[in-house]
Length: 443
Ligand code: NAD
Image (cartoon, rainbow, N blue to C red; front, top):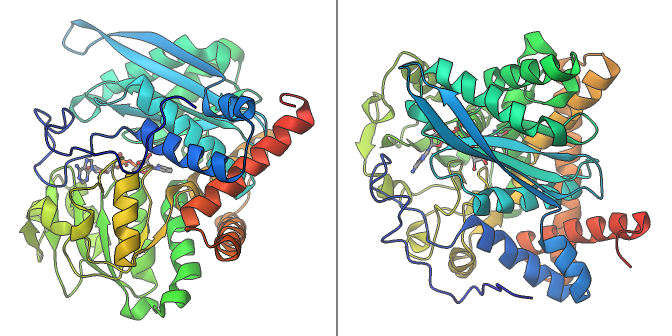
């Protein structure tokens, strides 16, 4: 087992090349340990506990296919620029590959590979019939004009169209991509293959998207809060919540949990952070942002240094930004009782240890943010049937799957005296091993 990363390894948060020189604000810089090392660490620990043979562990820890493509586009200002795109298909034993596409300046093969593997375990834990994949284009997404973003989306699909499709690999939105991006991707794929709505999920409602998909990941986070809260004696009306990252996942999680009666006492995004002990209205904050305001300018709230966000006393902390944000240097600053990981790989292994010592109850990404892929599965099913479910049906079915996943993981954690994360990885890996063996992929 090469490349083993142990939790004892030092994670240097300073000198992080992604933070230095980037346009992200000062604050909780991301750890130097990569997302790939984080995911591999958890896989290898679980593989050892499960006593997986080395050859099986090797198959499951490497990708089935990694595609690196040139994404050349003519920019709105007349220049031609070449971006790099990736699609990694990690494991397809349980069904077609499934995973989002991210547009971000930090995207690289290592990150996409990690996120693809995470999808394999996530779909298995949620018991939806997909494998794991991820894609990304390395581009300054937030500085792009809309027309350029569309060109990138279309060009990327042109380059990967041979390895995707409803029975092969189905992309979805992720960081800096949304329903509009999926509409362009579906349209481009349709030019080559005929109208095929099931080729991507997370589409707009007007283009055979599913009701409830946009809110699904945030809603899934809140379903898990409801499952886990009683163990900590938490009631929504007494729950104070801090949300790091106020994009799709963070803003929906904030709105839905506030709808239960919880108080949002701190929020951050790439432009800064705010706090207000009396509560921040997430709907008003969204309107403020939609009108062009910056998050730190939102009133009535106090602008704070993003690093201070971690220190706000709260019951639930929801990381919903990027990977590696909670690391060895800042985990001790967290002042929460429960952390529900909306983002992928927000917590490094060393930070996990610190949080465990502090007694923070961590609901891990592989289970906590599965709501998106679960409703993507519903969207794919609806597209294949050319039939639409109403939003209540989608949300009820999502709730059922999230509860089932939580209960099976929590039971295993209790029976084997493991963290939820370790138990979740074990369950996911066992299901993928079983599918791989039954197909005859592995002995
Ligand atoms: P998004 O682009 O809609 O939102 C990202 C948010 O993070 C933005 O508000 C951005 O300003 C903020 N952000 C960026 N850098 C930050 C920093 N340094 N500090 C604080 N905030 C920062 O993306 P999203 O779809 O909401 O995804 C967020 C996370 O959730 C990612 O890790 C993604 O992989 C994961 N995720 C998303 C989905 C989904 O359905 N969209 C599903 C599962 C997991």
